[in-house]
Amino acid sequence: MTTSNPTSKYTTTEYGKQNIFASQPPIEYVEDYKGYWEEAELLNGRLAMIGLVIGIFNYTVFGWVIPGIA
Image (cartoon, rainbow, N blue to C red; front, side, top):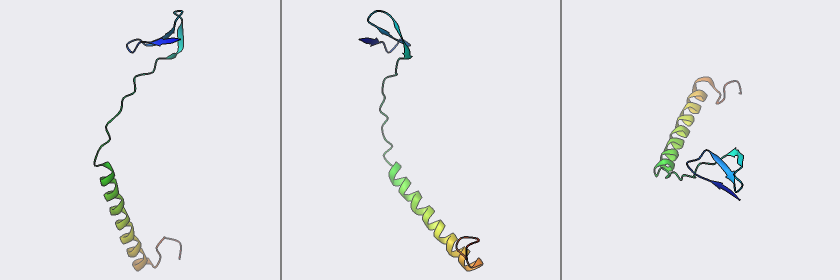
């Protein structure tokens, strides 16, 4: 049986021997940012619209959508 004290840096066995592994910090759950997915979806849509406009502009000016590919 191993015991670990959160304030201690070491894990010890019931015989008082120190473990070679460091004690693990307690798990903390971070609250998820509520508006993250909505903002990510808006950014994704805006970048898609910019890419479409750039593709149309590139096709009308140079005659190709991807430079170097006719």
